[in-house]
Length: 162
Length: 162
DNA sequence: TTTTTACCGGATATTATTTATCCGGATAAA
DNA sequence: TTTATCCGGATAAATAATATCCGGTAAAAA
Image (cartoon, rainbow over all chains, first blue to last red; front, top):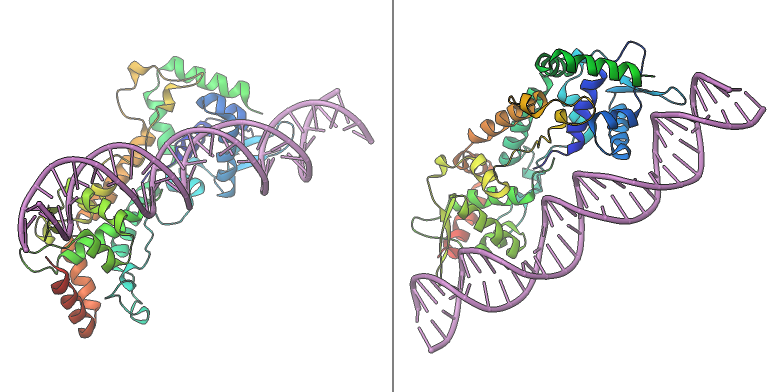
């Protein structure tokens, strides 16, 4: 039961994009350099974020990525779902229908009690993530940063934004 | 973000063990036959359940597995943790300390905001599973079963219990 | 119009995890 | 002593996660 590290990278990338000047974008390679992660794979995650509607992309020279909505309107669940997909983590293989005492398929209209419990727990997980926005993350990160780091971040983004 | 199917098998196995007569056990191979899953791998999951304190085992001839506590005192989280381990699904790699604007390690006493959000969501997931017991599952399964299936289950367990 | 730069999508390779089997040893009943 | 079972480790195959590369497309700049 592991969450891929692409989710962590994507979340940090979104937090970085919040400090971007209006109407500007950051290249995938620049984001990878900022986070110190492999560029090619980071680019893959950015494409997934785009397909998930989290970020917008501009192609060609002076292209790059920026958030598609206000950071307060993008949740950690949006980011997670974009990278990992919407498929439930618990996969019910209908064991109750198997074996010498298996239930008849026609009788299995209601979901299996075990699957129902896991899906309910996953719903709680999702709702928790849905309540935390990228804006919340960015605020928390910047609140902990000393003034000189804040300046460094702003300077870096100004320098690398397209 | 997948939950291994060993968890599903283990949960069904525990539900089966609830209908076992007092002081009796079921062999790993018998459990596998009942659920119609590979015997060798099912045996592995039963060993994990034992290490996790969920079931007790008796070795030698007429050996087998039985629940270690009352079914109402075993939660789906106990089962999940026994199979998948207690490690959090989200692994923070301290990206905030990396790259050209990374934070100094000495300043990172509080957990990263992203990691904190995921761990909080996971806690909600765990607490949900902790509130569902194997007894709840068993009751729900048996409530849906027609009388002839209930008889078949009881007959099968009587026949295969040691 | 041509060149340059960057995203896009697919193919591919590598590594880790999951799924699955097997075997020798320990244990307890027959 | 024999038989049946769990136990733990080694091993192997299948699947998923991690990572790279390349040809294509789009858009700006020269």
